[in-house]
Amino acid sequence: MTKPSRILVVGRHEGTTHRITRTLEADGHIVTSTLSDATALDLASSSYFDAVVIGAGVSHADVRYLSTKIQGKNSSTAIIVAHGPESVLSQLRQAFKERASADST
Image 1 (cartoon, rainbow, N blue to C red):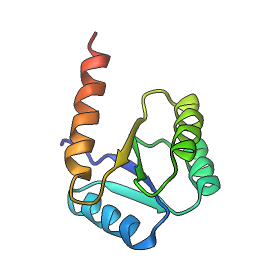
Image 2: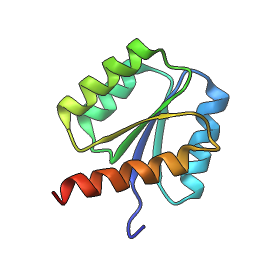
Image 3: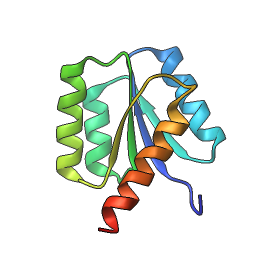
């Protein structure tokens, strides 16, 4: 990756959110994390993020709500529902690959 990606992590469980954040930071990303939907929406409204990683503990309804609101502000932001810290990097790479492919068409 040529420059670090800015990533917002939204979760419900502090331990899992922290592990996802540390995994992303160790891979060179600039990460902001929160356990609050309201804070996530405020951050996404005031700053640009390349991706938003939503923890698996977030309800489907909240995932849809967050996704709709965040992509309404910036449709190029990748939204990822992380299955856990172990898979978040591969999910992120896949989302960026798909976005690059869509941008080139």
